[in-house]
Structure formats: C-alpha cells, structure tokens
Amino acid sequence: MKSNDFTPGFVLGILFDNTTKGQKYFADFYINRDRTLVYKWINDTAILPKKHVPDVVRFVLDHTSPSVRLQIKSEIQHAIYVSCLCEESKSSLFLIENFDNYLSEVLLHAISMRITERHSKQSIPAENHKEVPYKEKNLVSAIVYAFLVPITGGILWNIFNHIFCLRFFMGGSGNEPSGITSIIWGVLTAIPVIVFSLLSLEQEITPINARTKGFLIFLYSLGGGLGAFVFYNSGFRNYIESFGLAYGYQECIIAGFYALVVSNFPLVVLFPVFRLTSEPLKTLFILILLPLFATVLAVLGTWLVNRPEIEIAQLRGFLVGIVLRLCMFVVVRIYLAECSKNRLPVLLEASLQSGLSRTG
Image 1 (cartoon, rainbow, N blue to C red):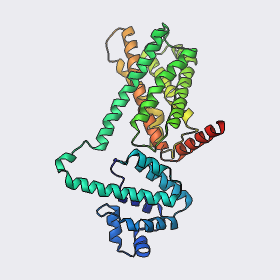
Image 2 (image 1 turned 90 degrees about the horizontal axis):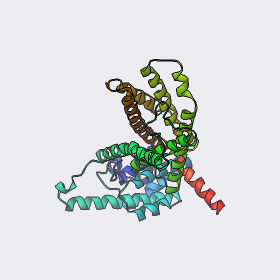
Image 3 (image 1 turned 180 degrees about the vertical axis):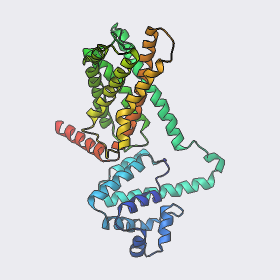
Image 4 (image 1 turned 60 degrees about the vertical axis):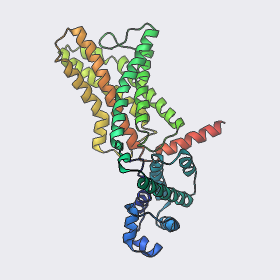
C-alpha cells in the first residue's frame, strides 16, 4: 500500500467490507442521502464531510461484532503506520482504546490529510509531483537488502574465523565447523537474514515494536544455530560419502539436505509464536522447497566450470552460501508478511509487556 493511500475513502472501504450492511443501507437509513454520494466518498472523488463522521461511527457500531471491530482496527493501524501522518499523530491514534473514539479520530485525520493533499496539488505545478512509484522503490530496497544478507553474514563469519584463528571459511568435506562453532556459524549467518527482512518490510507489515523485533531476531537466530548444529553434527555428509556415489550426485544430495535443515529450523522455532494465518500450497512450497531447489541448482551450476576440484569446491561453497541466504531472505519476508495478517504479533507484544510489568 502506498503511503498516501490513507484517505477517507480507503478507511470507508475497510469499514463497509467488514459490516453486515452495505453502502445503500447506510445512505438510506443513516444519512438520508443518495447512495451515489457514498460511492464518491469511497472512491475519493468527493471528500466525506466531517459532520457525517458520527453517522459512520454509529453505523459501524450497529453492524459489527467485537471481533470484527478488532479486525477493522488492525487493518486501519497498518494503513496509519505507512501513512504520511506525523509520528505524534500516529502515536496518539495507536493509544486510543475506545473503538468509537478511535474510529472517529481516524476518519477526522484522514479527512484532514485529504483536504491538505488537494490544496497542495492545486498550489504546486504538476511536474513537481513526479516521483518513483512506491512498488518500484520497495523492490529496489528489497533487492539491496537481499544482497546485503550474504555479504554481512560472510563478513561476520570471516571476522570470527580471523579472531579465533580458525579455518572454517567455505565449508566442504573436512573443512566444516562442529559443536559450539557450528552453532555460532548458524547464529552469525542467520542474524542478517532476519534483520534485513524486517528492515525491508517496514512499510508493508503490521507495525511491530522494538521489543518484539528483538525477540523475533533472537528466536530466528536461535533456530539458525540449532539448524547448523543438527546438520554439521549429524554425520550426514560422512553417511552419504560412504555410498561412493558420483561426486556431483553426492554433493547435490548433501547440499539439498543442508538447505532443508538450515533454512527451515529458524521457521520451526518461530512457528509457535508467529504462525501463518493460512497454509496455501503455494506458500508452503516456497517456504520449504525454494531453498532446496535453488541450492541444488547452484551445485549443478558448478559442474559447468572446468577448473581443478579444489577450486570448484571453494566456488561451490561460495555460490551455495549466497544462493541459500538469498532464498532464506525471500522466505522470511513471505513468512512475516503472511504472519502479519493476523493479530499474533500484536498479542505477543501485549504478553511481553505484561511479563515485563510483572517482573518489574
């Protein structure tokens, strides 16, 4: 959603989508006006007059249940978060608990923003309004964050290796971390995935406060450490190598298992707290299998390089690391975006706040 989509029509659209009666009923029985006028308000071709705000609030209260009002408030809060309202106004709206007061203030703020926007468009030449579309800006920033993930993870891991004089740089047979070192590797390379995913989703998901973001980063990093420990200490590589398979097939199997474990353990740790609202086949396919397929393809790509085996092993480790982290970034963004559609992040924030209050 664009930052300037927080309009009276946008809010009215949310309200009428969630009420048991439609625009015609509202026009006939609450304001005694022609329903075409209400359609103009919803489409923002006309601005909802402030005098009708109490009528809208009364209509919503009459034709929604408490649970539906919570859903309405959640959708509106997302719109407020990405809107052009100043931070003070956003904070003041978020703090209103009474639903009818909240809805009334939201509509009044949206009306004021719409009026101000119209005045500014009339006073500024049209050529000054040219700007990069929101989706394009968001795509560019997501791509930048995606490539920062493997770069940052690689830097952190190499710094760790240099500080402690270790040799686990590219991985591969006989050159892999184990024990506590594997956990550290998992944590250091998982942190950039979740941090840059949250940064790239700032304008798209339901607002999450700093405490909850910290808890989310902790959980995902913990899952990354556990996944790395399971893979590197399971003996899976030695088990597969014992079959004497062709080198290429052997590495594809190992890389596939590696991708499955390392990419999915962090999500398994998150799932009890941040669950998907639904589980469509397409979403599950991307979350579970995208890292596996992409990593195997990366391994297959190294077969086309005619270089000595030791160089190919280094190239494979480098390429697999980049591809896997890029896929994990995509997976986490999809996962968090889906999770933000329910109220679990909000409930988690409330429980964390309650727990801290009791501790204090």
